[in-house]
Length: 358
Image (tube, rainbow, N blue to C red):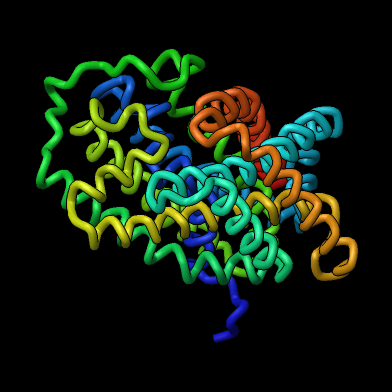
């Protein structure tokens, strides 16, 4: 098998890796979006599974149809030039914001877990992300393929042990007062959770879809990726609901959970967090840079853009990790709803044109 061949597993791993970043694996996203609604938050997560599967497949199908080199081809042909320009700006901003949040998340992890300077964690993640992205889309996909299995196995294992030790009382749990004030109900939480993630995902899965030769690979990859994201979300949700009073003020709540289990689990989960942050940082930086330059055809300008972008994200990361998740993500999510609607419109339009041409 060709090492650079895009398989079902690589599609799923890239999808998962782009989303399962600092906000997801630390537990911050579950706190901000779903746990605040009690058991209704669990129903919100079930909605996200369906949406992740559907829109993951749609983005890759459109990427293949339009032979996308970046997200620009997809959004312009889905919503038109005017909408495309506005959404392009939004995606560019959030790709940079996503990279910034991942760098900030590493700093928070270094401080909480290792008692080391936040800036050291920031710089470490910034460097390894830049080096990976300089290898192009193949480097991004292959890196995700190596990291994601370890990531998912450890997250699910840690959550399972915690749930066994501290079973959540779902039927008697109260709605948690906290989380992002931008999110008023559990249905909106589910839509925003998917929409802001799609803003990053479209920049990675679009070009990936253009490289897939078999439509079955796209469909099964989206299915496997969406189901895995849903299962991971549910496990983190169940884990944190049983400890919400102890973790709701922490920057990295899942580290508290791992520490409560054992030192070995703590070490493993710390490694997972670094891996999760790394995969989303790579996806964000790749999507941002590929919008402006071809990493394979213009290496000189690509190098400059990669390092300039990384340096500015490093500076912006000093705003703080939980603040970025609490304020930036929901705001982008509201704008990202327009992206989901345009993608849905493109699918309906294409199906209609195929039907009328028969």
